[in-house]
Length: 183
Image (cartoon, rainbow, N blue to C red; front, side, top):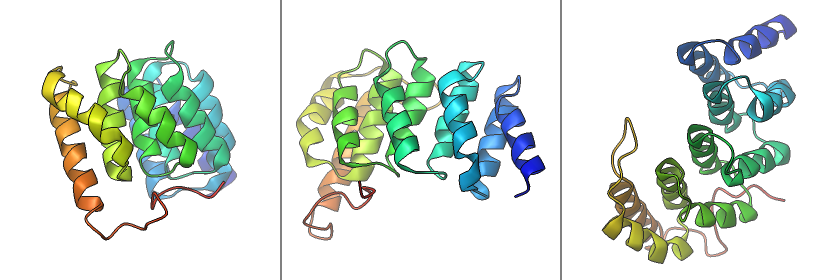
């Protein structure tokens, strides 16, 4: 990817429409370039609109480093950030994270935002985090709130429990999460 192409993609990521921003994120997803990292971090922290920041979080799972993982964790924990951004950050952490990310996502299961709870449940299910099961059971039984464009937190929590149980039926590594990035 040329310098000019990177500039254009970041300009589109920070564009005025959701479609523009997420098209740029998909472009980054399909042709990731580590040199985009500083711009993605800047957009996640200071993007002009929530959907720009959410698109940056989505793209960060493909342009991943310790810096991006830390930034995604901060976004999930930042209660003053828009729930959509926090949810995208939690989803991104499902695929690229460190051991501490598990703690961030476990705490997110108690978040006031249904979007954050939903995506933290998803991420923990992908990670196969056994410690999440008691909290997920509570969400599966009691959290009927629906996330726009998806389904209830309850259903996602139940799916996460199923993923965790299937993942721990003997084929996961004994030492922990198969997706953790070395610190």
